[in-house]
Image 1 (cartoon, rainbow over the protein chains, first blue to last red):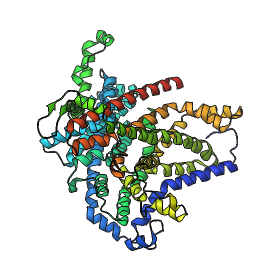
Image 2 (image 1 turned 135 degrees about the horizontal axis):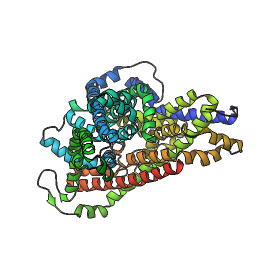
Image 3 (image 1 turned 90 degrees about the horizontal axis):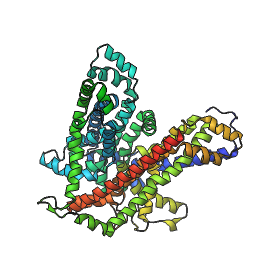
Image 4 (image 1 turned 90 degrees about the vertical axis):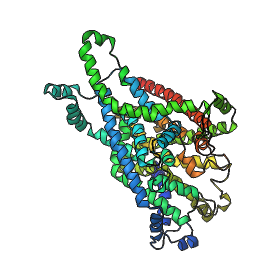
Length: 280
Length: 315
């Protein structure tokens, strides 16, 4: 933001500002319309259409939808699955990155590339064998099956990212700790993990949100109603086309709220994370 | 995987035993993930290739047919049509958002932040980024409702402003559906390149712009000759991540259109899922998935190579 010339607000720059505000409004408009209609009564909807602002607060639609799909249960499933995956995948990524980034074991570049490829490949290429095996071992239609699968997929990315971050870890600190007689596990737990906490936080947030938003594998693996995550439950309902307009917008609003909450909580971490991820 | 690690020649001469022991103790940390990786990714991946060489309904015995599924794929017009739809999604999810994101990032960074304050710029950025945080399942519900043929919000708006003749069945008309899906995808995607490019711009040395400004270069010239070359590494990252995401699209199509009307919006990911779980032609579905993987790996390799070249040129 250092500049030699004084920045003047010319008419042109105001025009740009206005057009960007218009764009921002267009981006937000669907959210506003959804919120409007989620709190309208069906009668008001049918007499005034989707665009009018609500005249009174009608929460029955939201309540009915919540109960009908047991939305609390779906939220809990999503939280359990995404939370477990995020914790487990961060742990595995740290262990791998310790060996690859700090330990520099032989062949580490190839191992990192293999992990990156594993994360890039389409899930369609894994889904049928996984479906077949999970049925054989009795894990089909359990939350555990989805947790195990996504832990593998997310930690593949985490390993790739964290290994390159840790290979730049200051060697002197490690040497000093070794002189003091710290073992490998101790160095990992007492030095590397605390110092890399910001990066680990970014990974945790990303794994959590990515897993939360996943649709394909949870759709295949979580067929019974009580195991479904929020996106799967909403997606399946949408496919059945059994909802009226106000109920559809109630369902959309309930799906949007957790995402907005995460967005507000994690906004800084998210933007920082994208910088870590992209420029590394 | 960890067992095959050996020691580089130069190091072996120096301290063979110590070095090897050091390697082994570190390699232990790869074991938990290695086991998981083999079970969840490597073995299923190889099995999928195996299945793609068979005719199998998923229940009985798979019947070995060699490359027959692949030759069938080559002459399957439905597969190629789905592949064309996928290219349309790459345009809508990677190329258009990257182009728009580049201009927006430069305007926000260079003009809005400098004249109206960084806070204004970051609020605008957050508004544009917001659709990115939604699970697509939810964004899809929002849009399929907005685009509904009778009393959907878009058609209602058109009627209100006197353009009632432009009302369409946006997702139900085979001629329009793909373009409608593309439009929704642009809405979903433009936030991502915007954020990455704005982060990248902070890395660029401001004296470059100042020198160009003193020399009297216009905004567009500075954008073209400084911003774009400087931000090339980020540009490749964005194109890579977004193209791969576009090639893997399943949820978009499942939620918005179910591949329809007819097959107007079907993509390979959806086609392989249909073969696995609806048509029970598991071998054929596996062949489609294998071809998808091949395409994605080739694209990733090409873009990563170009990106590392861009980074070398840039530094």
